[in-house]
Length: 623
Image (cartoon, rainbow, N blue to C red; front, side):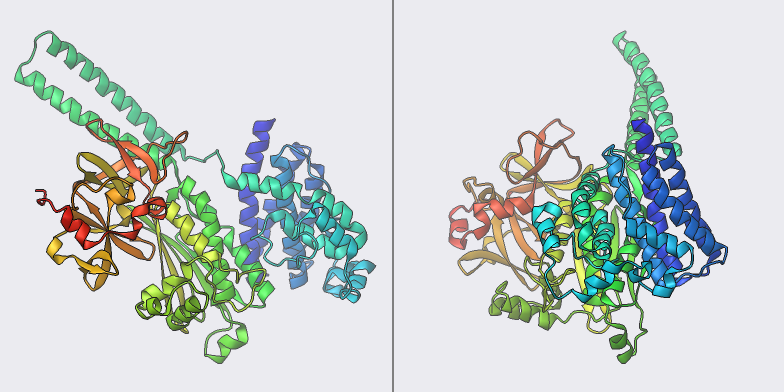
């Protein structure tokens, strides 16, 4: 039964996400019969699975919503904003019930007021009232009339454990971005009034907890059977090649070493090498999933937030078929939510302001993905007001994040990237949506954890574009092998801009630190030995120009051994600071993969060294 439940939840989650997207599209095309039929079938399918599992309350909710869409598709009712709010509230309640089922708990009844509003909508009576008061519920009006005085019972429920967001969240406002349970329940508290607070408070925390658990990591994955067939065929080919090698080994051990035998051995080894490479690529592809599965939840988020802010916004999605490692899809969710919310809140102007500058009243946010070589590029762009680098510099100085001297030395690109500093925000006031200065910092931190980079481009009056570059997979990491003496280390190749020799006569001292002047940039030299808290035996012969977010420096090394595609082995039980994992070279040597960000933050060598200390360790340049 547990397997059936998991299968139902996987399918139902996909169906409900699809329904959410179709609802956003339906709001723009309310007479589209094909969309109405698809949404109807989605709720019908979910209802059938829930009935088989005995989730009667979920069946009831889906049945009412299904009946509503039956009348809509038959032309008996017409879609209106009030009707759409009820439908979206119902989808949020369905998703909340999924949270209970994921914990193997039967969901309780949906909010009675929601069920009543659905019945009124089916009867065609909801639109005459226009809002929740159409249900004839006196507490709603009373609540509005007495909004100025404290709601002591609600306050008690919050303090007792219902959570700060439980009682007063506006209906339908940004519900998808918060845990799904809050969206549906927030409305029910407002509509039902004080008498209903204890009941709602008693059951609200369960579903959000369940949703958080599932968001952390899903263990199941859908794989195209064609890809599994390819893996099976390659495994069979490798088995045949292994048999051939075993036969050749027996011939050689018996003394048969003629040219034909050795040639056959060479051919078999080359074939095995090719087959193993193909098998590795095929196995990697089984982890790849269309990024559209992640993108499909964002139209609802953008729609709800735009409605809350009184803006007109369309989210355009491109490149949904682009494939990316499944583990990265899960870790990209929060960064993309931050960027989309920022685009709608900060980027897109109010309709009247857009009209005043000659723009259409509806703003556009574009979410696009594409593959470029061995990287995935994700773009989040808006056609809003854009960002002024001068204002960003002034705000950073005002908040004490940088000094006026540092601000004067920044170009336009560096100024724009100041928005990624912790605590930075251009918002003049703190709202439920933004203004606390944590969003973009979280975005950059999470992208860096995925061995990716993020860049921002903006033009005042034209809009802002965020560009995220990510590797195709986290299982294999391109690295540069560097050496300190005879000890090799690996650094992520994504952070390497170039390698250059260090000639002491070209080293300059700035602020007590040895620096190099590279194409207009003054970059400090940080010997790897110092970052590792090793004793500096000799002056570094080579420097690796490293780019970390908006900080560049020269990593001083003795020599380098080239590029490798490292298969990362994690150190779960014991991981020293500054070490991301280990890999094994072709010669069997174990090499530490350095976590440069952590090493830079914890190492004592980040202060750099003086030119005099380098000259004191001067040694001949390695060949």
